[in-house]
Image 1 (tube, rainbow, N blue to C red):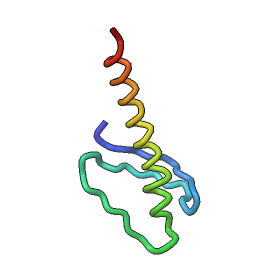
Image 2 (cartoon, rainbow, N blue to C red):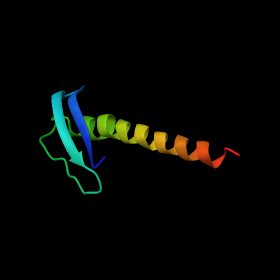
Image 3 (cartoon, rainbow, N blue to C red):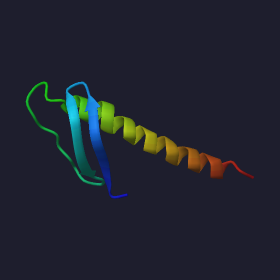
Length: 67
């Protein structure tokens, strides 16, 4: 997976936003106050990143401790 894709995101000020964000790149979110930047970055993308991280840790720990 070379990008994070969000479809129809709705949270706080976000109203049906769809976006594809490349991985391994620096990405900047800009916009006017109240446009949903923080909701997008912290609550939506951050939650997905945490979910993906947890999946990789569970897979790693499952193989590391299975004897």
